[in-house]
Image (cartoon, rainbow, N blue to C red):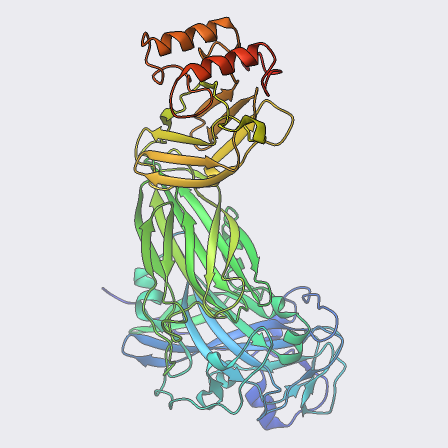
Length: 594
């Protein structure tokens, strides 16, 4: 295939105003390319109380070279102190910020992370004015603190300096703790520790229509201690140019979106994308973005992107509920691989389609502490097709590091009931629909309630999975109905056990919510023939049962005292009830509900 070479000329744009004079060597190494074009990028993100840092500008991207099918890049970043106290910036200690750089791609409705760097360790803070608001410098040059309202720029060249790039895994984004000094394997020439992107993910010839975004993400100790981590990242659109044979150059476009992680670019570009923020108690948080697309052939495509904003506990599993009868296909996963000697595994998460759910997961911490968990500043993709349209559901994020909670739920759209496999319905039951239980407890004077306490259901097909949440118990009385206490499943057969026996002289209805099918039963002591009334006719039925004229258990509830047999004592019990001598003498009629 013929390739065309585009020659790019770089033009340095002046316009950054430094609060005080800076030495030439520092200014040259620290000033971001094209910063002047960023000053008008928009309102600075509002800061919180106390310590609060954010990213104010992403100025340019440097291409370092290519090894094999991987090209290395770095991103120029400028941070802002939007809080009300100076931020520490002490080089060669743990009291300085670190900078993670990432690259993302939006292609064919799928938002993916295609590159990540190690973290750049900051050295000192230039007190730059103009980008973050009025600067209150803490000194005349490159200081150990960044003043309120001041900015500190790092060029793409400086952010790609391999000697100052350390492991992400030594940074806790929740507490802001940074292990320093750090030790790591020597970086590979050209691409080591920098943002690494594979040719297949960025080559314009195979990524027609793709959009790209670069991101800078800072972690400060004081900022984290103040709980202001949510605005620690910013993103900017970028363009990929072919500037030589297999030479892919990235140039920034549009303007920096301050204080906002790159995953939000998906919704900004495609407004039908849904976004949910997920907080983890005692930890940090995630952002889940997703989109459902009608394929036009009776199936829908479900696309989810989970970004670890600043959770130290990380994620090890992602679960989507799938109702019975829904067929799932084209299950996929994508992550970004660790590199440059990181101890973490790069094995893809395994997917498993089981009863009621579709699960992607890596090993638990107890099995492998170096498993491929979704750690801070990283994004994983999960996708599949299903023959059911979207409906409100719940996704579950399983957490990696031990602690409580072990998982967090998030509201999403996921496949609803009504897939190509059909919705299973109740086709038979014991007790049958409309049945009335005429029996009493074996110890009626003990106060035990009469009536059934379980439903044996037969569905139209194997249910695959079912839970108590799939059933609703209602009745015609004013008091609270029983609840579902337990579920037992065997193919199409399901036993639903209730928390208590159904109430007397009330119709109790068990509804299978997904299908709307139901079973309605009642309990009326002495109504042996099931005509909803207690009368002399019930005595006649008992006598027929004793004389062998009818099967006592086929159609009627003739074992009134629940002794296990139909005998003369059952006749006497019904006569007592009709004469008002029994404990249930007030229950002589039951009206059928509408």
